[in-house]
Amino acid sequence: MKNYSGKTINQYYLAKDLGQGGMVVVYKAFDNAQNRDVVVKMIRTDDLDGTKRIDVLQRFTPLANSLLQLNHPNIVPVLDHGFFED
View 1 (cartoon, rainbow, N blue to C red):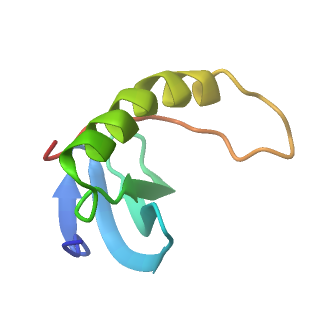
View 2: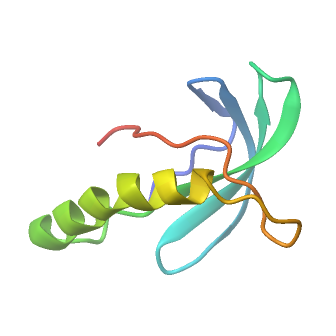
């Protein structure tokens, strides 16, 4: 996956790549709109074939919307979600 460190995507400045897993790349970032430090997780789709990629992206929005509703002291809150370059 392309490294987006040093780039701004929407209101998020991606300062540093913190690490990668099987499905995501995690960045230390800054939310320019809310003036706060955040973490941005980007789903890795570069190694998925067409059918699998479509399936992952179709499941993303309902899952993200569900996570936005969670409010618990032991769960890191999801603040936002969206799409970038497909």
